[in-house]
Length: 92
Image (cartoon, rainbow, N blue to C red; front, side):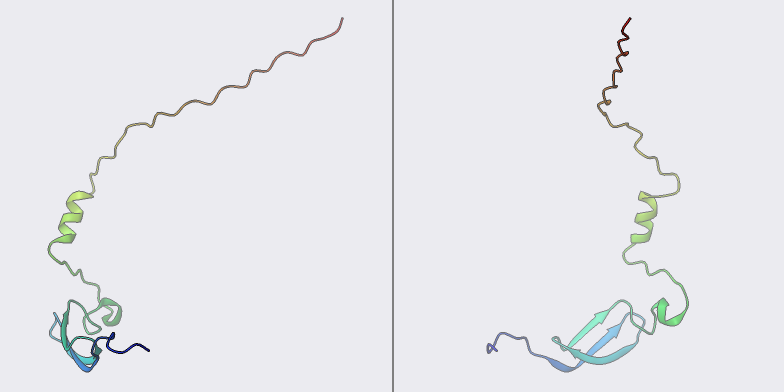
């Protein structure tokens, strides 16, 4: 294994959540902040809530709201040529 290529590993790195919860874990930085953790995530709490970061939900609803108009232009397709069926010649 090469020497001096790996970052320093902190065994007691402090993680702080936006909800106020904090815990220690192993990481390559001594301290960092997260927006959501197991104490406030809907999967673990069983309660659904919207986590709106910087108005992204409002921006999405404005862009793709209920009354969205779709582009109604038809694509220009070249029609397939029709098969010409010639009548069979009958011998008389």
